[in-house]
Image (cartoon, rainbow, N blue to C red):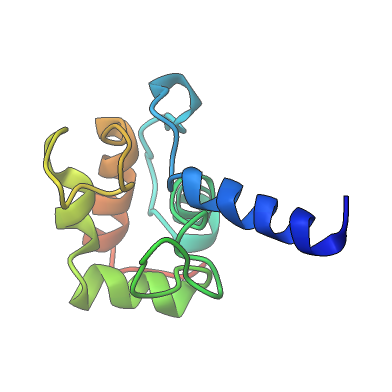
Length: 122
């Protein structure tokens, strides 16, 4: 197999992969937070496990922005409708993660609490 064939095959395979799989058991489920929610302690792992596949440093699959650091995620909550998009019902074409089932409500609630607590980094 030459390098060109390998590259074409890998490119085709990457097109077939969506931002998430449709298995709810692979989505991160999170216990309620009793103290202040912070990006580093509570939100970063949710974003890394559910969003960065598409919202990487170089966005993929049509994602309009990166969500790889605190400032980007904070901006997405404040100005890009992140909470609205992840809170939509299954079947809505604007639901994030794209193409996948809705995040568990407990996971969405962590991000909502982070916003209510002032979008703290640490």
